[in-house]
Amino acid sequence: MTKQQSLTMGKTQRMVGLAIFTAIIIVLQLVSTFIKFGPFSITLAMIPIVVGAAVYGAGAGAYLGGVFSVVVLICCVTGADPGGAVVWNANPFLCIVVCMAKGIAAGLAAGLVYRLIAPKSVLGGTCLNRGCIPTKCYLKTAELMEEIAGCTQRGIVLDAHPSVDLPKAVAHKNSVVKKLTEGVAGLLRSHKIDVYYGEAALATENTLTCGGETYGFDSVLLCGGSKPGVIPIPGAESKNVLDSDALLDLEALPRRLAIIGGGVIGCEMAAAFHGFGSQVTVIEAMDRLVPPMDEEISAQLKKSLEKKGIRVLTSQKVSAIQDQGTGSTVLCQDGTRVEADKILICVGRAADLDCLGALKDRIRLERGKVSVDEQMRTSIPNIYAPGDINGKHMLAHAAFKMGEAAACAAMGRPEACDLRYVPSCIYTSPEAAGVGLSEKAAREQYGRESILVGRYFFQSNGRALASGRGEGFVKVVVEKRYQELLGVHILGGDAAEMIAEAAALLHAEVPADEIADMIHAHPTYSEAFMEACAAALGRCIHLPAGQP
Image: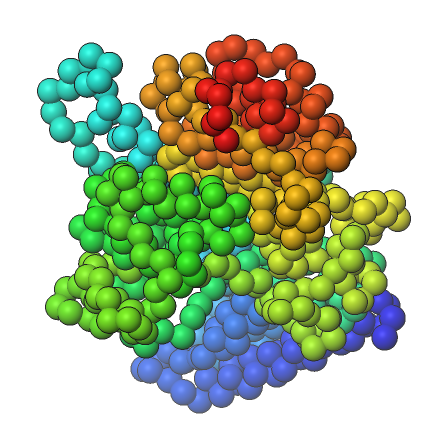
């Protein structure tokens, strides 16, 4: 089917739908002349007007209101409506104006009101609205609480014990999100980009539907994003069980919070709500937290969370959730029980495929995600799927580049999207970040004896100690023969900022020996990266002899 044929079909469907609503309005209004409450006629004709406006938009509502007006006017002229006949006989012009204005205004208002009250999508996607930005607001609050607790070591005297007002924290989070979403909307307006709110879905290879309207396209980008993943746990329907979206709007701090899933979201929410004052338990089915992370960093992250007072249970599979009074109990397969007031299930995020619409069986999927090439092109050449929906890297910064690659390809300027060196970050305190190959992956790929590993601990870094952030280290993975930098992994203060330098140097293919020779400002956290490269080559003079 061609684009023109698809558009013609969409228009035909709309015309048929409006014709049906027109017939219903005529019938209902004519019938109303025989149904009276005292001197007044009772009509149900407004129902199809409102429904038609909801399905086809405010313009369709105005048209259907006009149909209603014409029928009412005919009833006035013929005398079928005695009250209207009086007005017609007294002033025909006034009768026409009143009838037409009333009906059209009612239909137009129905469409506009529906648009106001109908659920709207919000610009900015998962990261801005339900992920990166909201969680960082919470994590900054938790970080401040931690810093306040350590103020006495710096000679600061606090007269009162600080606490978190969660409704205010939610309000602050919402204000930040609102400012950024409005910024996105402003950018779109400045570039004269039309925005239509509604749930869009593919109808054909060249058309989509949104808000009851059909739109044609030459190319389309499917940016459906992701939604919280689900696992079949008996009792998961409990009112005490939340997903990550719901937790971000929780306005009463739970005394005990159990988190099922020790991935990025689970670790970040554990850090945030522990900082707020909750007793937090993290339950992870795998043998370590955040399995894609370098194993050494993962192990140290677990120790860091436990040091704060967060209970971390690994290699624990949840068998059921049972409600107990106002709280709930998480039951693990080995018999372990975790009591909680609220339970967060965060077992990753799944691609949101609703936008595939009528083509859901034609677009090729891989493990529940849309399969794409280097230009983000799907199995249908003019349809592209950048971002979380393809599952390559469920990270906003990766989605940005994928979106750019898709847009360029759609406009006839295809460029491959290089996703080899996408940094990943966890915004706990201390932060964790990594880019490139883990030590395990590097040894598997290059051979155990072909890999060098260097570490530099923040307890030896002047800036880190002065800032009270001596925990953690920088780890580099280097290919031995050519001293090629293969991966960088960091646990420590500002790790998410430090990883940018590592990603840039990996992308530029700068070898470890050259990085070791680079002069870094002192005192800075980033010195640790230079020192770790030197350590991998046996050249670090700022580490004690024999330290790995």
